[in-house]
Length: 218
Image (tube, rainbow, N blue to C red):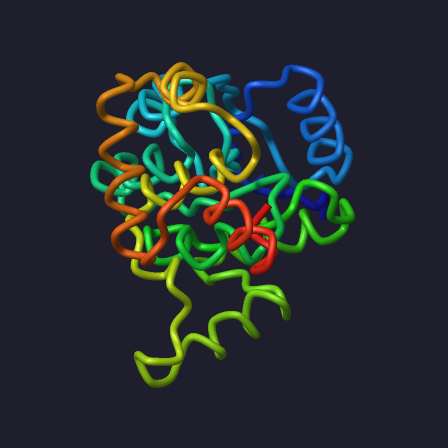
């Protein structure tokens, strides 16, 4: 009796990154596995939000740094409309900066872009099963944050936008440059700067830079 071949159901993935070369590299890695199909690509948050709404997918790979909105802002909007889509945040930043904020905002996992391709494939398979992918380093950060409030770092009290402004100031950007990068007004960025200085009991940009470097946030 002739056997009927059963076609393997592939994991459907959306890639969101503003760098075309990096998208191509990730796509090649995923498709080479033979188990993953890239069904859509986006280069900014606006496209990502639309694709999450209109494209059937199991997993979205979402870059933290996008030209029109932050990845975390996009994450929140996407999860509001499509709570079942599993999102893996990809970033050049180490886990200490954005991993916990991403997971708290609805991400199912967080990986640094320099991670091995095998880890990326494992993460995608884990998310496709509806599970979270937490690396050992992220698990350690989460464990450290479970405790008394007085043990929390000062920057934990910041909103996502305040935290982002803080790291950009610490990276040497002016208020005007930050406004351009985040598509905000100078007045709005100045407001976030004032808030974060108050919350962290700091006075000047130099204090912000010193704090960020000391806490390995830049």
